[in-house]
Length: 312
Image (tube, rainbow, N blue to C red; front, side):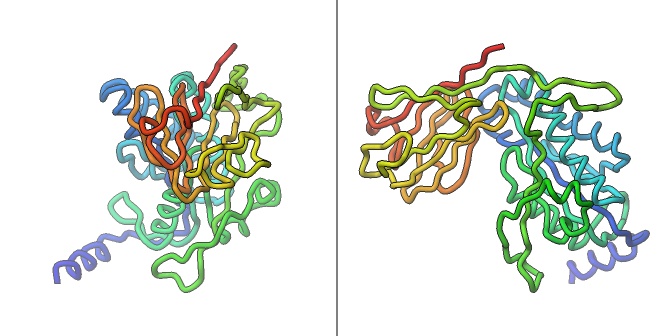
């Protein structure tokens, strides 16, 4: 009964129904940032990122509906504009000096369709789908739906790729998930807020060490595979490791660890608690260790050490 009254109250408050692009974007890994840097510094860094996302929204003539902690919800009247705004949000945040220093990234999801507008807020299936797309997106990623991709102009459609299909509650057909590729292939000067900025000219690489041998991940070798398979670039001599256990990828100035294993990987970064990563990804920062199927303290000799090296 109470829920029915709430629904009637919302229905009465609805001022109109519109077609809008709804976008959610939030800072990745903010919980660990608070643990690592403390409340005051972490909050200031997150606020800088949120301010940057709000600034992009305004420049694209969108409306910030609300901010919740490290997350922004915005609406745009045009789906192509929403797509470009999501791309510019990624660029705006990843070029903040603070974000570069602390490895901060954001992840975004957006969808287009009918929304109900009430009391300066928006509701409906479009909002729910956009939120779900944001939830499945990973650090540094923009995810949208197949429905949206089919609405985009050709130059933006070419910057998308199919990821997967997912059954979503309340929908008969599976939801097609597409990634929007926003990172340029070459070093370009982009125009933002009427002025130009150049991508920071930093030389960033990662050194990995395992059983007395060293390996590098850099612009010339942007990915490295680890596993028990002899074809792995870092062959692991560990019974708890899978044949194709994991991979480290360099994208711009960040390093993403992707686990494909059965037993998972324990990742310990300097100054942070050890975490278990199983069939998901995490951004590696500073230095630390990667241990296969067991905490690093159980067998330090079997772990891979890593270090991010930054040179100007």
